[in-house]
Image 1 (cartoon, rainbow, N blue to C red):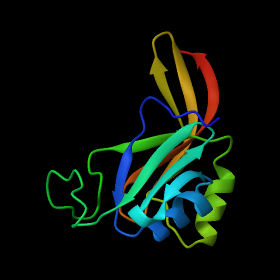
Image 2: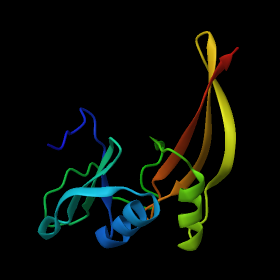
Image 3: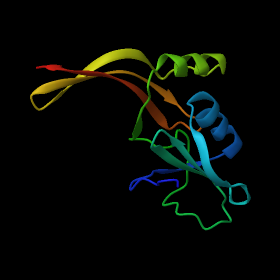
Length: 140
């Protein structure tokens, strides 16, 4: 049985098929379920979940202001993956440039530092997606 997370962002998108191509073909998500007649898809990647909904001015969607690209200003979605290199390769084959190049970063977390190999890419509507490969912990 499919387990839905307790927090799942729902992103408004301008073109669902284009967004699905990015999220599924490039980032490796799978479609848990979808309602094409409503322009909706629920995606999953090893427990990282996101919902995509195509903007429809006639649908009474929960929009607090007119949308203009880039969408999602002020937020980035961090998603753990086993390895970032294969994702970067898929993005390159799709002709999608990285927003921020891949690098190893260490963040202090109490008495240790946690490491991650990370890069940032924008989806077709401009949402920032940060893909992270965990590198472990080290002493501060």
